[in-house]
Structures are given as structure tokens and as C-alpha cells.
Image 1: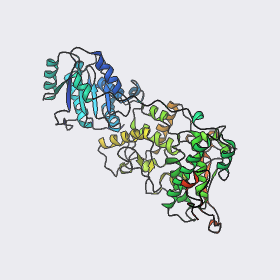
Image 2: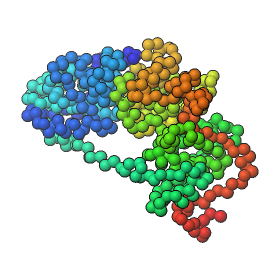
Image 3: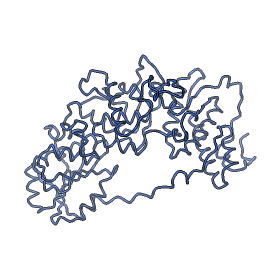
Image 4: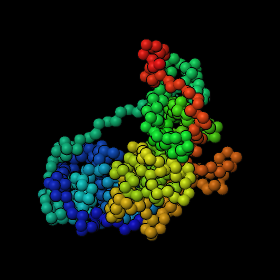
Length: 488
């Protein structure tokens, strides 16, 4: 990791000036209800982070490890990744990426003055409120805070703390499992898929499949109207279709069978515009529909959140989402990443080798990142900004030599992270490795489309096909089309 401005020790990181930036919660009686309440607040995406100081540790370094645990890291992750010397800036970056607005310290009466200063500066760096749960007489605590921070802290009661930070509502129960929600689907190709579903599915199951099919087809038609492509622009067509499948339809489907329905709908809509999207499921194993989904799932994102190094977590998330091992990621700049990590704009400078991964990576439309993985990219963006990087500077940097190309370092970090998560994607293997080749040991170019057996091409002479446009999908949802309202 590069030297980073440490919000815990930097003299320029001043404290916030609002009256409520540091709040001492009077819990003199040590009410156990306070501990139960902060347990409900300590949840991902809730805007709160709970710091539980190690008993008996009065040094700032150990408190930095506690702050990393509050950011969702394993207690030994910093030592395993050899970043113990940078715990405070890394923890601050993760908390910034998680959009933490309230930093809660349990049993804060155990802290020393130096530890209070470090926490106060970190909270000010995050523009977050620092809540100190003081399970001891309040008057000595007020005096200690005044002495350590140079000004008094606002004191509130435990009831006021509960009122200002209420417990979140219980989440809704999970929906039905995928086999119950979606029936078994026929293996028919897209021209006859919907007709085969009508014949083979139970009458109660067919409307759900039909509606999902028409929704995806209608959305694809609307998206096609925004494109301005000619039959000679094959690379741009591949880039556009990849982004549409990966980020908007198939890759983000809630279940494998839903992804299959969406794929067949997109194939049908593209075919009517002279574009053939072919799919080879025979090379994808016994359940090919499952391979249609994106590899960056919510479970994998949760494991990546336990990683300390922000560059390793964000690079692995991008590699899993795009299905190539860090290729061309070194060309990304800070300005290419959305502040909340929701989108990535591909680089405009083209390399000497424009492979399939480059065409999928550098499309005109931003790459959309799944909701659960956005804090991963936002955390590394905050880390680079804390290093003083400008918007035009690289998003990924070599950890030891900023002037070197970080491609090899990123690939090694992605490999180690995937190995720790128990993942072995084929794009991590070289062309001469049989695990990175297709059936028959034929080397393939790693890309999102190739990993799913997909290929897109213009239909030769499609202008002479004169394929009639279908009736509006809203009319096709009924079993019978009303001739009085159907389009001519």
C-alpha cells in the first residue's frame, strides 16, 4: 500500500465544527439495552458502524484494528494482508465507501485521550457523527473529552440516543426459492421458445413466463431504438449487446430460469432487427442457464467486503463482473468511477492489442455495477483520493512504484483473492492451460460473452429479409389479440 494521509494522525485533518459531531451518550448504569440496540444498528448498508474497543488495549494501533473490524473485516485480515501499518487510512476508506454517517463507540469510557483524538479525526474526515457510549459516570467523561479534544461534547441520554438512531425495521422474509418461483423450461431455441412454453407448461405457470418474455423483448426494442449502428460495425455491436445482456437483462436476472427467459426474449428482439445472438449451451455444463448469470453475486461481494486492501477487493469485483483477469484495468482513471461505485466508464485510449475484453470494457455506455458491490469500488476511490490523487490520475496504482504498470500486480492480487474465496474462474488460467481452454483444448479469448457461450453477428442481407415487426408487447400479453387495436 502506498503512504496515505492518515485521518487518525494528520494534523491537517481538523475536527468538524458542528455541535453534534461528537456526542457523549450517558449510559452510567451500563444498561444492557444499549448493547442490544447498537447490535441492531451494526448492519451493512445502514449508515452506522460500531467500534468495540479491545479490552485493556490503550494504544492507537490496536484501536485501528478495531476500526477495521467495524468496517466488516476479519480481526486477523490486516496481518494476513500485511497492512497493519495502514489500518487507520484503510478503515477510513472502507467506511467512506460504505457511506457511514454515524460512528458508534461501545464502552467508550475505556478509551484514552489519544484514542479519542484518533476517532474524532476519523469521524471528521468522514463527516460522520461520533457517538461515545459512556458506561461510567458522565462527569469524568465530559472532562476527559474536553481535555482530549479541546472542547466539550454534547451529552444526551440513552433515550435520546435511541430516538435519534432508531432500530431499523426488520427485513422482509426471503422470497420463494427459484425452483418454486420458475417452472422447468423447455430447451427450444428462441424462434419457438414461447410456443414450446405454452404447450408444455401448466396453464398457471405460463403467464409468468410470457410476461417476463414480453417485458424483456419490449425493453430490448426500446434500447435498440437508441442505437446508431451500421452492419459494418461488428465490434461496436458486440460491445453494445454485451453491456445490455450483462448489466440490464440476463446477467442481473434474479434466477437462472429467469435469465433463460430473458435471453430468449433478447434473441427474438435482436433477430427482428437483423442481429443474430447465438447461444451454445452444450459447453456450459449440466445447468447452462446458471452460467448466464453474472459471477459477481451478493455472496461473493460479502466475502470481498472482508478484504482489507481496497485495490484487491475492487479489482477482483471488476474482474468477476467483466470476466477477465484485470485486462486493461490499469487504464482506468478516478474520473471513470462513479462516486458511489455504481458505474465505471471504460477508458478512451486504445491499447495496441484490441482484444474481445477491450471491446467489452471500453463501450460508450458505462458499466453498471450491482448494488451489493458498489461500496467495493467506492472504498478504493476514497482511498485514492485520500492519497491526494487527482481525477485524471490512475484508479489503480502500483503499490511500490507508482510509475510502473500495475497490470501484473492487479492480476496477482485478483488471483490471491479468488483463491482465498475458493473461486477458480477459467480466465485466470493461461492459454496453454487446459483449464483455461474450451472443449477440445481450444484456447478462447476471455470475455463476458465467451464465458457464456454467446456470440453476436449481423445477419447477412438482413435488409432484404423484410421481417415484419410484431404487434406491441402490451397487446401480445393477452391470449388473443384484439383486431380493432392491433397495429397493421
